[in-house]
Image 1 (cartoon, helix red, strand yellow):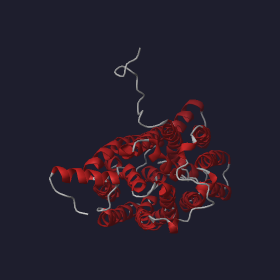
Image 2 (cartoon, helix red, strand yellow):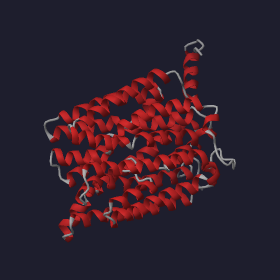
Image 3 (cartoon, rainbow, N blue to C red):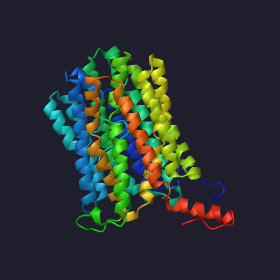
Image 4 (cartoon, one colour):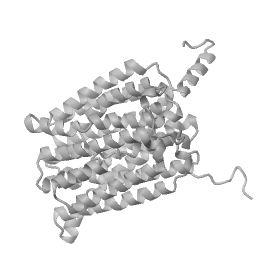
Length: 430
């Protein structure tokens, strides 16, 4: 008979079944998205689209995400989180088919808008605020940052493998004699199949993820108790998101391709390695946050990564530019699980969807301008400008966040501060 000492325990048993399904689904989505993000700009270039059109296409998909984020914030409680998760994921599957079989820019742009297509390699989509709002209920509160770290590690690791899979078209060309366009279309069809599989994962998520939903027709974010924190944080994050939009992964891939003549297979390996480094850093971020706090971890890891971005276009050799990108990749994502954990902790459970959807809404309102601004700067002046502008804006955001929110603690941080003060024999300041 099994005893408590020898009973088998599932890995990550502290995350319940719903949490594991949500994490699995996001990993599947980001694997597909990681592959597409590497080849997308090159594929559109091969179709004959101009650099400005490529930037506009990426921006249009982000506009669609903004529209859906607004609707999620207002009506998610009425429609249901699980239904919306499946709907948005199946929409992405439709976009993959459209990319594979159409070379019409108006049709592709319309499909990108309707399906909220994202060219980012991180799995961002209209489904993300729903996942973020659901995850805190899938693990104990003291492991909230850990579950977000696992969520992002799975996504980033899958993105890394997806980036590696972006080298498949080159292999197909060599093995089967396919044209480059035909080989790239295989990736888009795979993207479709994987999003259908991700939607099936959501089908088995239980009703327990419907956090704070009481059947009301809509949620008015302007009347929420935490509205000041929600809108202030979202405004700050919008600066970071705009800066990030200047350097979408598709554009960085295109930069390596045009500036140094790096081949697609090698670019795929670069992004595979960079995403592996980012995945490794996420668990480090969770543990570091337990020691120095969530805001400190976000800021003190992000500023050095921005400095590395500014230095990248100054690199005279491809190997040096790749090295700077890899170092930046290790530091640049450490704020992701900490930000997610912080934003979900400083509001009440019933306000989580509003917080997450407002963050995605503001990101989606400003991020669409990023690729278009970046390609305009690139065409009109220099390919260096998007890198430099991104770094400067991100540093300004980090400093503002630290000044405004370093004293706003999560419940866990407050308890740790009280425990530390008790050990020191004094009462913490209010």
